[in-house]
Image (cartoon, rainbow, N blue to C red; front, top):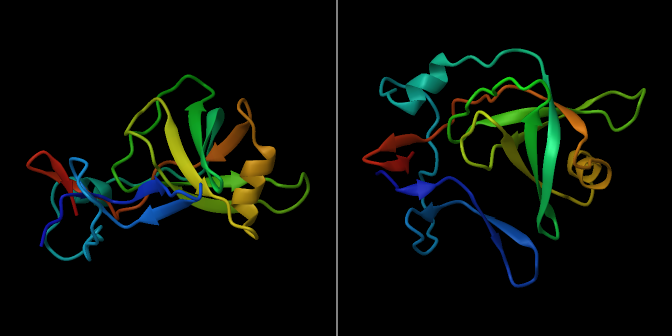
Length: 173
């Protein structure tokens, strides 16, 4: 079964908190549940974006990206827009990929590594990640309390082969 859906949609509820829905029909239809939101790479039927993701190996290491904008989506979710500090183009991600942020909450302490799904349009000019702030979540709490526009974060290349593919003009699993 194929589903014409977006992978995860962020929706504000009346309480001001955000909820993550598993799927939403393309074209702005009502939300509906679907058991096949994203399909991992595997088996013999790799084609389209799946084959590109399998062939695309993320470069090791991290690149400094400047926080150009922070949007408060609701009480417990922020979105960070990240742009290169050196003027070079970013690797254009595939739908469904994620980046790893290397955070340094203390000067001499160990770094925190956190993975965040890319939540903005596919671009080689900036990445956008949305972060849910959990009460005891070290990464989200640090980003919410300490990071401001103009700060620089260490960010990996987009990675992950759990991506969507395009079929007949729609994103499908």
